[in-house]
Structure formats: structure tokens, C-alpha cells
Image (tube, rainbow, N blue to C red; front, side, top):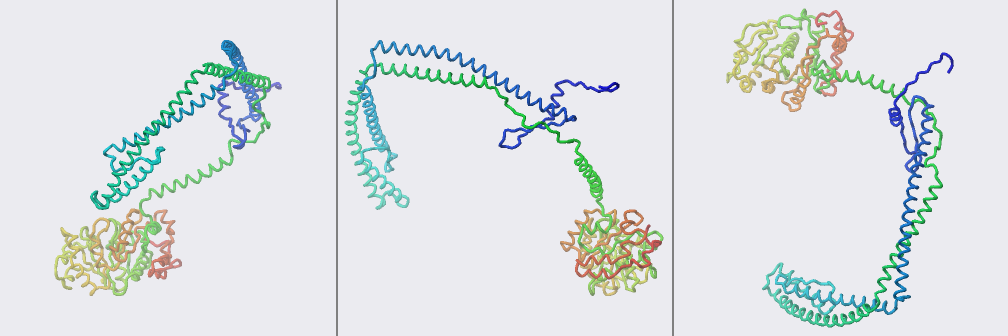
Length: 622
């Protein structure tokens, strides 16, 4: 080291360092069919890693050679000990053989003894065969003597050599099978079965006689074979017992000589292995540095990019997840395929007059244009001769009464005679909205009657106080049975009478998500306008809307989105804040071309260049 140079040294426990190297070392085969191993280690110092891998190969060979030599030394000690012991036993056995031959004056075994032994084996086999035949005949005889086996098939092909008995048994079995086949459809006394039974009895007697004769013949044959067997067995007993003793001594001699030769061979092999010790492993290629392995820049960039994309996506997902209420036109369009005939902005307080009416004669502003467009769309959805339009919603507070009242005024401004009917008889709001302190007159007084005249209806009708062409038929006194009243035919009679007098009949009904009254009103309606409200109506309400439409429980359903608050930033951006946005281009409803006859809505609008898009318009809330 140079003067002034410093070096920092960190001393770690050897066991910890060894554990770290072992954890960082990876070993893998270069291929499945090779004995070459690829060693890889990650280290901060490439030089240190190279030295480690080289020394690892040296240590591996050294330990392998030491293990192999230790095994060879111990093997040699064991073999030498065994050779000494077997050599002693082998010499003792050879001396025993030599002494035995001298004592018995024996050179080789006599040929006659071998012949006698061979003949004895043959007659022993014949004797066993004779005994087997007798046993088989006895077993057949016992089988036939059992009552349960009468007229049953007898065992065949079991080794009986007497052909007459075998032939009779086979014939017997054929007749038994034929008899059993007939017994499936006939009784034992049947004329077809009785002859077969007689034949079986005769054959059974014949079989017994044949087996008795065969047993006598076989007994005579067995006695003759036994006599010959005894003769040759006596000859064998008379043969000197030296043969047995010689065989025993010879076996011991062969086993010990073979073991002795095998140990001599193993000792030579072990000596060669001990003398020629070679390394078990060979370092084929010197360790090489492959470059930087960690940290991996590409992986870090990839992970950072994934996180950068995942976090905003998660935030957007959470925002969408917790937005359980509709926010505007696009949410409604995603939730239903029903036509959306208008998006109603929140009106400013300065634009409202009596009954919260924002539609006025001889005025041109955004709120006026919204309801004019809604009015035009309703006219196109109503067929010729249809006059009845009902308003409903899922829950209270969505603004259906406000929309119904202003649409009624919009029709009245055309010079049409319009009546606004309050059929939300559980919670009527028309009287409150139009500031009429009269709860005695109303449609409930008519629904209780069985016969209704035009004079009765006129007696319950009140002027709106807003427009001379608009009249009100309010709910009247709240009845104890509103659902039952609406099911009466008197409601149909009232509507038919109103059609004779008025050009348009606007019905304000109860929320269909709370009560079933509106479903009863549906039978007299030609068009149902379903009102939903931004930031108020839950998204799951559209399951009910779509179900009602699919099941045709309400006629000709369309949707109005109410409560678009342009003072909020999200709606100002979404609807074109300050420039009327969607309301400045009502040609948007041309999108409903997929709904068939509603495709003409696109002809009404494109006010983008009109003065209705004036950002100073005070009719809507900014």
C-alpha cells in the first residue's frame, strides 16, 4: 500500500461467510444426458468469485480422493482377514477328504449304485401316479354318493386314465346338461325329462362299475410297482454311504475354494484402485465473469412502469367501485338499452316560477330548449291517437313530478289542451307544487264511483294557475286502499273521458320501486317516462327498469336523466361547462337509430351555433 492509503477490512465469522457462499452458489447440469455441471455464483467482487470457484474444484477432488482411499484401505484390511480364515478352513476340509478316502479305501463310486438310484426314482414316480389314480377314483365315487349331487354333472378331465370311465362320465354330463335345460321349462315328471332321468340312473350304475373295475386294476398295478420300488430301494441302502459323505465334503470344498478365489480377485482390484488415484472432477473451463447480474435495470424499469400503471388503475377502479349512483347520461347508456329522451339540467332559482315551472312562453334559454326537445321526442314516440303519458321513478325524490309539470306546460304552450293527473295517491305532491290549498277535489273521489260522467270529472278538475291550457286533476283525499282503487275499471273510464276533452294527458304516478300502483296505471298509458336523477339514483335500480321493460309490465318505456348539476366541475367538463355541452347538440339523440323508429330524434337539434349555448344563460345552475 502506498503512504497515506487506507483499507477498510470487515471480519465475519467463517460459518456465516460459508453459509452466504452456499446460498449464492447454483449448480445445474448443462444437459440431461451429460455429467458436466455448470457452477454459478453471484458476488460483489468478480475476482473473489473466480478464486472461490477454482478452489471449490480443488477441495472437491481432494475430499473425493481422501474418501475413496479411505474406503480402499479398509476394504483391503477386511479382504486380508477373510483370506486367512478361509485358507485355514480350506486346508482343514481337504485334509478331511484325504483321510476319509484312505479310511474307506475308495477311489470312485460304483456304476451300479447310480443305476439303482435312477430305477428307484422311476418306480417311485409310477407308484405316485398309481396312488393318484386311486385317489381320483375314490373322490369321484364320494362325489356321486352325496345326495345333493344326484343328477348333477360329474367332474371331468381331472386326470383319470381309465378311458371307459372317462367316456361314461362325459356321456353322463351331456345328458345332465340336456335334462337341466329341459327342466327350465318342464317338470321332472314331463315325458321329455323322464327318459333322460332313466338314462342317468343307468349311466350312474355303469360309471360305478367301471370305476370299481378300474380301482381293482390300478390296485394290482400299484402293488407290482411297489414291489419293484422296494427292490431298488434295498439296493440303494446296500450301497455304501460314502457317496453322501463325499458329496457333503465336496460341496464344502467347492464353496470355500470359490470364495477364496473371489477374495483374491477383489484384493487385486482394490490394490489397483488404491495405486491409481485420479481426480473425480475436472475443471473444464476457467471461471468467467458474465457481467452485472443485480440490480437488473430492465427489471427495475419494468416494475416501475407496472407500478406507475397499476396505481392509477387501482385508483380509477376504486373510484368506479364506490360510485354506486349514476352520474350522467353515459352511466345510464351503459346500464340500459332504453332510449334516453332528455338530460335535464338543474335549473337556477331565478328561472323557476310558480310550481317550479321553468318553461315559459316567448323565452329562449337552455331549460326551455331541454323541455322542447323532450316534448318533440315524446310526440315522435306517441303513435297517432295516443295521448296518455305517465311518469314514474324508482324511489321518491328523483324529480318525476317536476319533469311531468314542466312537460305539461311545454305542451300547453303549443296551444294543446293538457291535463296533469296526480295518481301518486299515497304521497300526492301536485297540490303542494302548484300551491293549491285544496285536498278535497281529486281523482280518488272518481275512482270510488261505478259510473263516471264528464260532469263528474269536470267537478274534480282545477285550473293550474300557470297556463290556461293546463288543468289539474289532483290526487284528492288519501284513501285507505290505494292499490285496490287503481285496479278498478273506473280508472279506465276516467282516462277514456279525458281523451275526449284533452289533447295530452300527463299522469304523475308513484315510484315503481316502492309500490306496485304504477303497474296498474300502465294499462291506461301509451308512453312511460322513467325519471332517474344524477348523483341520487342507485345504479342497481336499472335492473328493475330493464326487468320491467323485458317483461312488458309498463308500456313503451323511455328514460329521462334529471338533476345534471352544471355547477359541479365533473358535469361542467362532461357536458361542456358554460357552453351548454350536450344540450348544444341535441343531434346526439340520433344515436338512437338502433332503436328503430326513434332514429328521427337526430333531426331535432344541433344547436351548437345557436344563442342557446350562451354561457351567460341563467336558466340553469352554473
